[in-house]
Length: 329
Image (cartoon, rainbow, N blue to C red; front, side, top):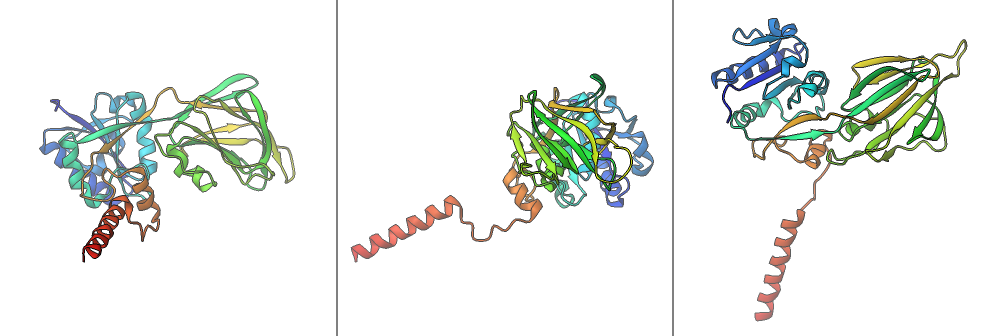
């Protein structure tokens, strides 16, 4: 393993258990000779005197081996803003409700830290999306997302009127509550709540999921990762007064106002987000788990009665032995 190891802690300090967990992790890492960085905005709550304080910027993650995120998916998405440009992998400890992006749970964190210190982890590359907002043909905003970019109505009492486009050709016009452009990683987030499909994270694709669209054809769609998706804001329908626009949210964190005639373009991101995944261990169901296991654990899916191929083969072999014994008798 490399010398002078450095790791950054990003913590949901609004949760007392998050602060307590962060202190314990910082002490374990420090005792193992790892230099621990913390964000200045979180340092007072974490209270780790040996930690190096850093501002919230890509420099905080620059040169670090890993960003350890203690919180829910929202905390990990916040940490991704500084880890992505630094090309530093994220490792999530779930303190939220579902925590699909997290790698482990607090009850098996001790084993997880042992694996991290031993270097027993792999790094996955997760596809992102780059988002461009144009107004009057001029680029107004460029941003990105790991999970999704959503175009949503600005006025609660109205629907937003959108025209969608794929690869330069119009697809449909919808009066709707909004539209979600998602990555496979984001297929279990907002897009899932809007009725979109679950897509395994190693599949390269872009998702387009309308939200409560009043149209005959308004199904979720999965398209090529090389496609360019777009939505143009016509305005709003219903209600009284002048037409208003919409709002763009990226990962639920970055918001852009979209006036009528604004155009949102979404394409495959130029830079991925890196996630650290532990190698297999029996310490807990979520450590080193496959995506199928993660789905079952996070959503509490019923799997009673499943035997698997190994058990089925064993039963078949036992029946054959019984039949042979009966024939000999």
